[in-house]
Amino acid sequence: TPETTAPEAFPNPAADLLFVENKGTREKKTRLLSITGRQMWEQTILPGGHFTIETGAFPDGLYFLETAGNKTQKILIQK
Image (cartoon, rainbow, N blue to C red):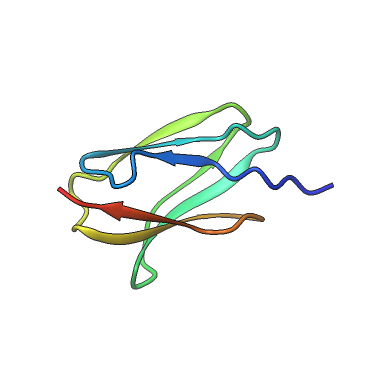
């Protein structure tokens, strides 16, 4: 059966750091896309794993955290 638990991203809005945590039981290929579709970050997150994305160099704006098999989450980067 497919897992529907999407990784959690916080804080939202983010300034310099965005934390992404996989609380599911399967690995998740996850990427952060700019509003124009440019890939800013990509990582496969293992079950129970987490990553920190350094967003300080990213322009302010709306981004999308996309996970294979799950819906996309909107992320605001605002400094």
